[in-house]
Length: 132
Image (tube, rainbow, N blue to C red):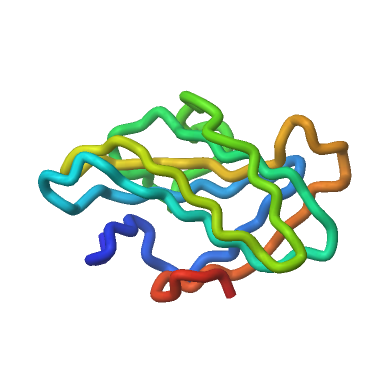
């Protein structure tokens, strides 16, 4: 875990299609705050694509070396649909959390998105707050 709470600190390729989603996880590290704010910053896109953000049912960090669709935690709730724009996107939402909570999310194509229209990919550097 990094000092910013990121559990999987490596630079990662973020990839979302109709059959591929991306899972990301954090640990709440501020004592006594009980509130976390999730930011999803996306690069500019040529055409709008509707992505869905889900909260996953786990309280422990996921071992990314063994992660697959068949062993990923189940979805607990859909948090929101996110639509990247031509000028990029900085989406955010406040969530309740406690010290040392593990927060795990999945970003995938929305079920409302027509087949074949959802395809996004970019590199996320773990030391940067914005994609790229």
